Every structure is written in structure tokens, then in C-alpha cells.
Amino acid sequence: MPKRSPASNWKNRFIYANRKSFIHELLHWRFLLTLTALLTLSSWLSHFWILQYAGLASMDVFATVQPTQVAERSRIVSIGEQEYETYFDARSPLEPQKLVWAIGKILELQPAVLAVDIDTSPSQYLHMAVPETKAPIVWARDARAVGGELRPKAVLGNRDVDPPHWGLAVLPYSLDWTVRTYPRMFRVGGRNWSSFHWAIVMAYCSGNSDPQCPPKTDTEMDAGELSVPTFHHRYQIPNIPLADILVQGSLPPDNNPVRNKIVLLGGYYGSDEHPTPFGPVRGVELIATAVESEFEPQGQMQNLTKYGLKIVLALLIAWLHHTLRPRYALLATLLFLGSLILAGSYIAFRVSAYRADFMPFLIGIWIEQQFESTERAHQSQKRPLHRAE
Image (cartoon, rainbow, N blue to C red; front, top):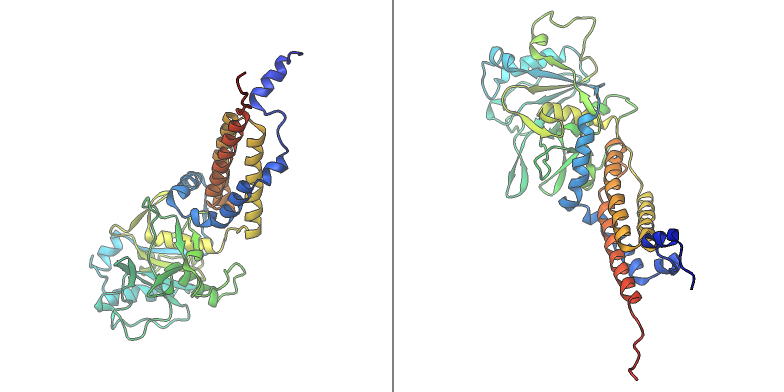
């Protein structure tokens, strides 16, 4: 019998020879059953935190190196420590009449929308005279968790009639206590309520023909599907100290920085900071970032494309295990999965076309192929038994 060449022996260490056809293995009942089950369940499995976190952690890395861009529509008017002491006598809650005075001064500059990120739930605000203006005023409404459910606090001292524009100013944390997304809706009392940033966007778009305004949504839709990434862009929100507006002549009359802009009035005193991939960020800055993100939406991958990609990836893993011997197929699969997490996270960060439900799907296919490889190895070791003479 002729000896095999060294090149042939080296090749056989890595690659199977004389295997059944690849199509025959794909039609095996176990592969087809696993593929069908994972296509059905992978989206549900992806909500498990352990399967999400690898992608989220890598997205955080991309977020920290993302260059900032100046916000186009949003401006912050900040109540800093100096304004807090000088104009509001360092009182909490802020004195209603002085707050009305500050709001009136901002409205004189003709913003498109004024969003007041101040807690107005105390009873002092019940009789506060809200200025009449063409620009809508959107009020922040806080909420507290009671028994695992959100319960909204009062707005404007709990008046008999709520103001026309308000939203829940609640920031959702991931399990690692980091803010990464901002929902458009919150589920409260069996129905969906607009979040603060979404109420601001809807108030702005109702009076402006901005072509980049997002489409309106049904408030009864699933709130979980309305969560939008907050940090697919790093925004630098122009910040104007309230003192520059209250002191006559501080703002140049020929260069009004807030005219026709979305203005958010918020406090820069106290400890209203929240952990993000970029480090601690003020609550009003998070809301402004969410507002800006709505006007530069990320693309979404269609379900048909998602399922098609999953099938292609499953075939690739099956082909690796069909062609390579077990240890090398395992190594190639692990390298492939690691690369997919890194590449998929970058795609998610840029265009939101990748979802974590690819990972449980691929892991399931890989486990099925491990069973298949074990079965092949067991069959290859079988030898016919000969009865002793």
C-alpha cells in the first residue's frame, strides 16, 4: 500500500477526508429541529443579561472614542450654583414666582419649545401663574417606584387639570447601573405614558415642519419596542448660563442662540448626575442627548434580513464542523463568535442593525454541532465484532 505524502498527512490532521455530503448533514433531523427552534426563540433568549452584556460592553468602548458633534436643535439653559444662590436664594424647591420670571425671560428669546426640567410636584407650585406663550412649555414629571411599579408624582402642584405638555423624567438603568437608552414611553397604570424627551420632540414637531421629525407613535404600543439608543452619537449640547439671560444685555441681540431651538431649563446644582459609558452626565444633558438622537435615527434591520443572516451564519458554523476536525472546528467557531461580537457591536453602535439575539442563536447551533461531532467520532470508532474461533 503506498504511503501518504507528508503534505497529505498534515492536511488530514485538520480536515476530514471522505465525509458524507454537506447537504446530507444539513438535512439531519436534529440540525433542522435546532435551527427551527432557535429561529423562533433567539429573540426571547437575547433578553437574558449574560447574553447582552458582551455586546453592551464592547459598544461602550466604541462610544468612548466616538468624536463629539454639536447639537443642532437643542440648547441647555443651566441653573448653576451661582444662579441658584443669587436668584433663587439657594432654596429647594425653587420659589415659584422667581421660576416664572426666569421662564418668561427665556420665552422672550422666542425658542421653539421650552422644556422645564424642574421638579414642580410640591404644593407651592399649585397657584403658579404659567406664562402664556406661542412656544409650548413641556414640564418634567417625576415618578417613583412603588412595589415594582412606577407611580407618577404631581406636576405643577397637582392641579385639577394637567398642563397640555408633560413627560415622565425617569432615567432607566441597565443591570450594571449604567444609562444607555432612553425609552419613548413608560408603562404606568396599565398604559403607556410619554417620556420627557419624547414629549419634547412631539411638542416641537407639532409646530415645525422639520423633515427629520420622527413619525408619531401609538401610545398603546409596546413600550419595550419604543426604546431608543441614547449614545449612538456623542453630542455637545451648547450650554447657556441662566445669568446670561436674566442680566439685560448679556446676550447679543443679533446672535440669539436659542431662537427657534429646543431649550431645556435644568439645574446644575445638587447631585443630579447619572453613570453613562462616557462617565457621569447631568440628567438634563441626557434628556437633550435623547432629543437630538430622535432627529438622527439609526437604521433598523428588517426581520426577513435578520432571519436570512441567522441561517447563513448557522450554515457557516455547520460547514466548519463538517470540514474541520473537532478541536480545530471548536477553535474556528470561538474565533468566529468573538469576531462577530466585536463587529456586531460596532454595527449596532453605528446603525443599530445588529441585535444581541444573534449570539444565543449561534451558541445554540454550535452546541448542536458539538453533539454531531461527538456522534461522528463515536461511529468512526465502531468496529465489527468477530466471534472467536
